[in-house]
Length: 109
Image (cartoon, rainbow, N blue to C red; front, side, top):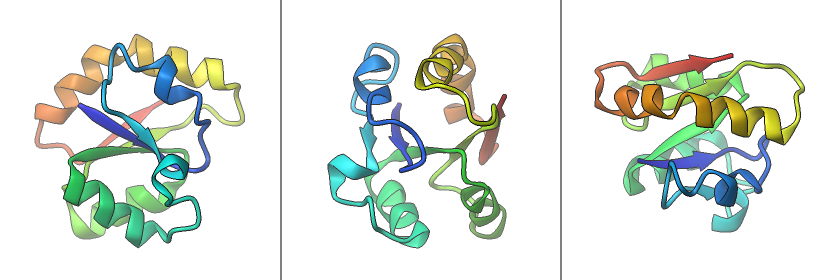
């Protein structure tokens, strides 16, 4: 499962979570740091990514457009990168199950 981290999350999450989610990327490393949400959505859908964001706009897009791509919403407020990393790592099995489910949004917090 490949995750695509939105600009509101740290680039450091990619190498930190490579063991659990190989092939993941950050929008900035793909040249999408100034892209619109619609462009990020299209890229994720076309390339098989699950979007990870703190931005509720992707949750609303998912409700309107459906999957793919799927969306993981991080709802832990303004916490450190290590807190986000730990949250995602602790829920790696839940995230992998989410990929196989019919659900389009997973909220972690």
